[in-house]
Image (cartoon, rainbow, N blue to C red; front, top):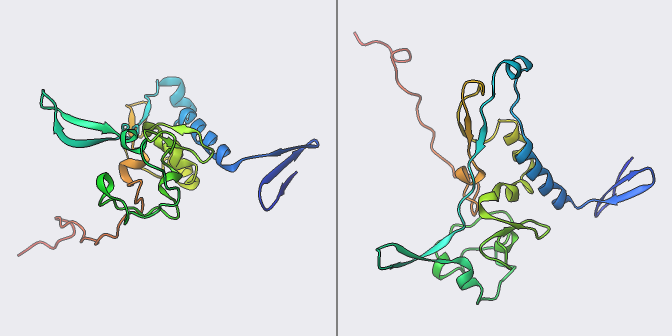
Length: 210
């Protein structure tokens, strides 16, 4: 029996009542889905062919700021985000790019009602965090995206969302799938409007000239 209250979903089974945190449940589901999702393949193919793997591209490396300086070997000198943020006071209400200065000047930010600290970890600016506070490394950013974008994640796991390269038939070769941030800017995830173009002109659609 399931009863839905105003604040929390309540699951009752055999007199046992369990309060479930939606954000934690979504995050756990996303992590499990990413690690255990298997391609749909016919029983015959599974018996006769060894299936090639599906690889999901990792998210970005932990970002570092290019200081504009070079070391003695000519390599760029970079600084970790925490280098500066460890000496600043976090502002949990900041949700606009207009008052960002220095390293963040010019950032295009528009991600619903989220603030910077909805995703960035104020306790460790070299990482992200889930809604329940658990740390997420930047390469694992899909886990963070999935906790809010459950419908998109469901479609992604079924193969109807997100770009990919490789083989549909995994018995013939492997497949490589894009990460969320390969297509979406995490600070401004909505795709901009684009101007449609005319279809390609070829020998079938274009009348032959006389």
